[in-house]
Structure formats: C-alpha cells, structure tokens
Length: 295
Ligand code: UT7
Image 1 (cartoon, rainbow, N blue to C red):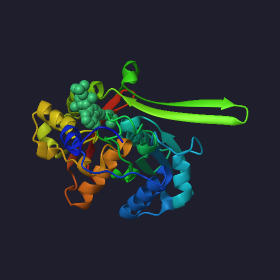
Image 2: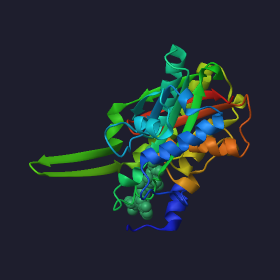
Image 3: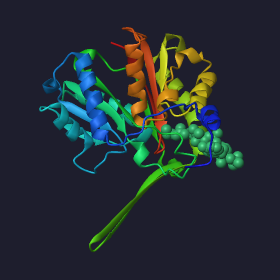
Image 4: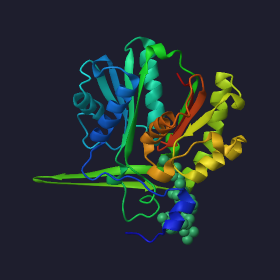
C-alpha cells in the first residue's frame, strides 16, 4: 500500500507484527478484556459499580463504549463513561477510577483501554499506518487494594497539532459523508516523549519519595522501541526493567499498558509488593506517570 520495508519498520519502530480488527468492534475487544479481568479478580460482574473505558476509537459516538461493555458483561450495578486522552488514556482513566474509589462513590471498578485505530489511520500514510495496532486490556481495581501511590499527570494543548485525528462531517439534505484522518509529526512526538517521559518519571519518584532502585519495572506506553530504550538510557536504568511487547502488537494506544501488565502477570513476573511505574504519553499532547504497588 505504501513504499516501505519490513527492515525499516523493525529497525525504526521495533514492530514485527500487530493485530487489525476486521469484524470485531472496540466494544467487543473491551468486553473480552473486561470478562478476562473479572474472572482473574475472582469477582462477579454485578459487583462492579464503575466502568471507565479509555478510548479514542469507539465505533459509535453514543452510547459510550463503557455502557456497551456493561451490557455485554452484565455489570448491571455499574455507572459507566468513556474517557479520551489518546495514548495516555489508560493512565488518566486509572487515576480517575482511583479518585472515584477514594471518594467513596464506588467500591469496585473496571478500567479498560481499548482501541481500533486501524479504522482511523490513513493507509496511504507510511509514517503512521506502519505503527498502530488494535487491542484492549482491562483491570479490576477495588477499595481494599490499599492506598494509591503517587501520580503526576500533564497536558499541553499548545502542542496538540503534532498528533491529531480530525473527523470531517458533511451533512446535506439526504446526503452525509464523513472522513477521518490521523496525522502525526512523528519526529516531534518522538522528541517530546524522550524528554518528557524521563522527566515525569523523576517527578513521580520524588513525589512518592522512592529511589529508582525501589522500582521493579517501568511499564511504558508501547509506542516505539527506540523511545523505550532512550527513556531507560536517560534515567540510567537497565533496559531489563523496561518490559516491551510492541514487537507483537504495535502501538495499541490506550490499550498498550494494560496488555503489557496482563502479559507480565501471566508470565509470573509480577509479585506482591513490587513497585511499578506506569508511564504514558500521546495526543493532547499529554503525559504522566503513576507509582503502583502490585497487590
Ligand atoms: O502513541 C502515540 C505517540 N506516537 C508516538 O510515540 C510515535 C513517535 N514517533 C515515532 O515513533 C517515529 O517518529 C516514527 C516511527 C513515526 C518515524 O520514525 P523516525 O525515525 O522518526 O522517522 P522520520 O519521521 O524522522 O523520517 C525519517 C525518514 C524520512 O525520509 P527522509 O525525509 O529522511 O528522506 C521519512 O520519509 O524515513 C522516512 N519514512 C519511512 N521510510 C520507510 C517515514 N516512514 C517510513 C516508512 N518506511 N514507513
């Protein structure tokens, strides 16, 4: 479709494979992830009282993806809404959910990152169509999980033009067309990420009064292998503390952090009491980091 090569993609991004939806919707993937998380948590869907879905690629404008997930999984007691912070979405949604839990408004929440960006990319644009993949990940978070670790969240709308997805609606009598285009200044986003992500990690560690030695893993948004490597280098940390799976999924935007967490959990690498830093960045531009103690 575009002039590129497998070698270029592997060397410049680290992506070797990814998943693209055909008939599956964002709701379908989010519901599958939600059911797996609920099963893993050993609770019933009826015990969930809040569902927040981080997505910028819901298939319909409303009802929101979270309500559709609620219907699919039978979480009849939950109130539900979506949150759009692009690739930083899971991190923002996680913090939103924690705040609701701390306020006493709910007791057991489901936070999901789900994206079908393959429907939004321009398959003629080689700087973006080689990068993104579709997917979903979910986590159950309940009040008994203990106090929240420190978080630092940032947005800078002045930099927003670096990564946009505009939908142009044209409505005329008896005729309606719609065009969506994802556009990215890859180099600008790359430079932003390799500067801001190490900074925000330092900031959150200082806020949490933790040293880098006390962190077992840094779970970074999986955008580009070179970004992860650069962040590790700037922090002076071993790359072994930066697990990656983007070679198999591409950049799944708000789904990348929960998919990686799930894989680490399944492989037995996450142990109770370990401290993790979750860090994300993306359109907005937005970025942030949270310290999480694995329970
Ligand atoms: O998750 C949301 C946040 N998004 C990101 O984090 C993405 C951050 N950015 C990136 O990951 C990288 O900037 C890209 C993977 C998008 C691009 O890699 P790059 O090394 O920054 O490439 P570039 O944009 O600086 O372009 C270098 C060259 C250009 O050619 P010239 O002008 O030097 O002749 C591009 O036209 O590579 C060319 N190029 C390609 N060549 C082959 C760009 N895309 C491709 C391609 N195949 N797919």
